[in-house]
Length: 266
Image (tube, rainbow, N blue to C red; front, side):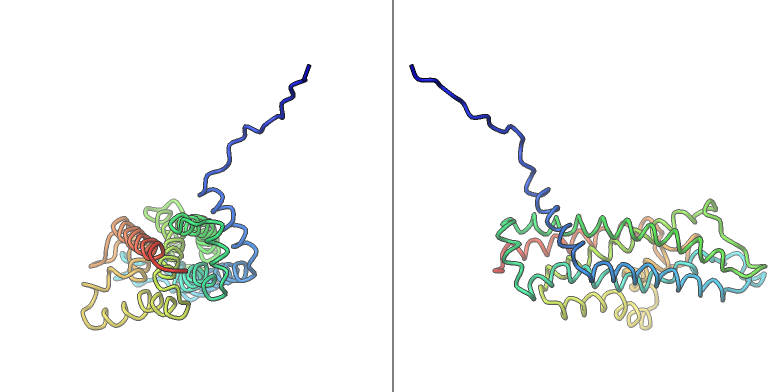
């Protein structure tokens, strides 16, 4: 008589391709020294700019008291933070193409749309957490630096918490824009040039030529005059409209980047 033996099999279901890709992207992101240094620069730079700006903020005259918005002043460092976070987002994609490691990534994750979605999800989550944390820290540190006699904004004042939280979310959105632009160009220098052009150069040029009519739709103008304000600014987008426009920019850029990645050679 022959004894029949059975080998136990594992019934644990494997993780989804997206989950595996996201885990791989998280390992890569946290293992790079540039990630920690860039995020540290974002935190220290934003806090320093906010504190210095608030320390030099003077009490408004009676004529300007109604439009005085110290919340906008304390969040001035967002301009620096967006540059660092955006450039790092570009490098998350283009860095792999410049060193050739993209072939190993695509061997592990053949679906390029999944790869890009994982990069965006991981980097977007990290920058959202960092952005919200640094925005809150900057607000309280800058508030403490105000001179006596200058009205101090409270986190519970109308529009203040919304302005602080949207400023933090803005950093994450710019980081995602960097990833999308990096996927579109796959070249570090051109992607950074495009990012800087859209966020800094074009708004200044167009704003100088036509005023806020067109310039108000550019990311930096939305951040400084729509998101990071407790009081509405004339001729600018409302906070939630500006936020919706930025989300649309991110969706279009990432969608176009994913489409091009899927149809081009590595």
